[in-house]
Amino acid sequence: MTSESLAGWLRCPACSRTLQALSTLVLGCGEGHRFDVNKRGYVSLLNSTSKVIGDSAAMLDARTQVLASGVYSPIVDALIELARPSNARPRVLDAGCGTGYYLHRLLTAVGGQGLAMDLSPAAVVRAVRSQVPAAGRADGYNAGLVDGLVADTWRPLPIRDGVADIVLNVFAPRNIAEFHRVLAADGTVLVVVPTAGHLAELRVSDALSGGGRMLDVPADKAGHLAETVAPHFALDRQQNVTFTMRLDDATADQLVAMGPSAHHAPARHARADAATFRNVTASVDILRLRRREV
Ligand SMILES: C[S@@+](CC[C@H](N)C(=O)[O-])C[C@H]1O[C@@H](n2cnc3c(N)ncnc32)[C@H](O)[C@@H]1O
Image (cartoon, rainbow, N blue to C red; front, side, top):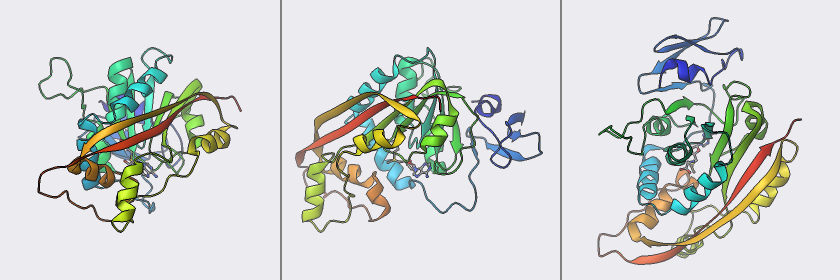
């Protein structure tokens, strides 16, 4: 990451002019607005009046452990296949990047460079670090691959027009008009949404034990999404990915703790006695949306 590569993605949140690197740790626009780049490789362009909160460190820890266990590999494998027809070395914006797991896996498979964006600074810090061991680097840090941005998806994005080839949006909020603006002419959005059957067994056991930790997924979320985006995007491909995960108690608990419900109720802790295993369904729809000229 350099402030030049970061600036290449960005526009000023105050006046919408493009940002330039004024030094290694300062970005600025022609109107005199200035923004400090964090030494860890990201800039915060968050409107300070924003009341929404991103994922906490505890939720990110749970997510890191679940994803590192590989239980969601079929989802990332399918995403990579759907991204392959894009440009060689695409520029990928990950909106709601979390720990950056999907972005790094995608860039490692297809090449290119990324902008990891999230409301949570703790998430962006993790996402700008590579989680894929980089050839020749003992620390696994793949400098130069991913820049970081703290920003709110529901606000106008401080990102230049037409700068991305792919917007990645995995289990995260969307801003369809802004995704359309920041994408190049034939750019695509890759969206992952859960189906109503996702983690169904965990929802049942949560409800039986008092409930409140897991939010329901509406029926046909993907179909509804394809309809709402139609003015901006055509549905190019839709793929369902459903599989059974064999989870121990601790991983099952972390799966609950890493999700949106964790904002609403405290995580429980797995029992200390011998782990029991259970089968849990993972079920998501992946949509590849192609940008329309509007
Ligand atoms: C369920 S997590 C998914 C993270 C990641 N895409 C993954 O699947 O591993 C949702 C992410 O969206 C972020 N988020 C929530 N609201 C947001 C907003 N308004 N703008 C940007 N990010 C947001 C959260 O901080 C969190 O990292």
